[in-house]
Image (tube, rainbow over all chains, first blue to last red; front, side, top):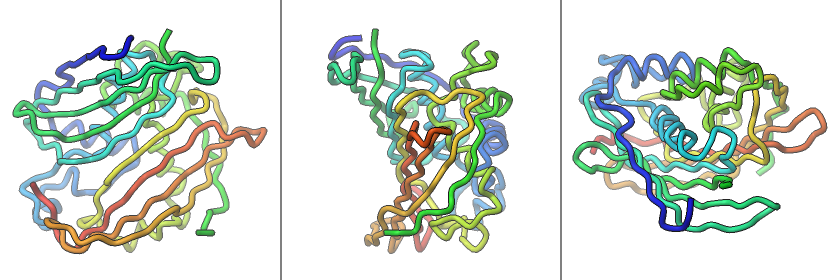
Length: 131
Length: 140
């Protein structure tokens, strides 16, 4: 992993509402806006949408698959758009800097989540330990 | 702001780590190990442990969930969390401000930070989140 290294992958072919239900159970985020059509519509949304932290969690999985499970020192996400059922989700990472700190070689990465139209859902950045 | 809560024992449980990993589509063999490394966003499961505790953000029961958005979330690790860790989590509000939004009317931002300490009192991780309370729905 060197400065300028890029990595990108389609991580969800088609977003399914069942993913939001499973994430609700696993995380404890039971806000019905993510699983109840009636509730989401009453709030003015066309349908349910993903928990921001579901999508952030999927981005983190993309990152740990690439950098290693125990190598993440910092992970930050900014939620810029909702993820809707039926969308295709792509995660991307780009190494912006490699440096030494606390006896470790570390990389700063820019992260993003986009749909099949290239619309951004999450902007993020992370610090990972590299070999 | 001095609004830190009393602190909460938080156990990184092996089964919960495996369940959470599956929910974020993480298929790594790591999560079948007894001392599995928790996924980076795993501290979000803290909400289970404090469901019955008043939150420093004053959220929970009385809050209209139709109007709460998650703006930003950051995790910082001194070391990875592993199944079997018994930690103490303390949370506080670190910033609060309002902005006029184009799509959501007046937006109130609440920034909170949770620190996770081990049995020796050493900080092992931080979680920082920004919640946004809007005055109307914000579809794109």
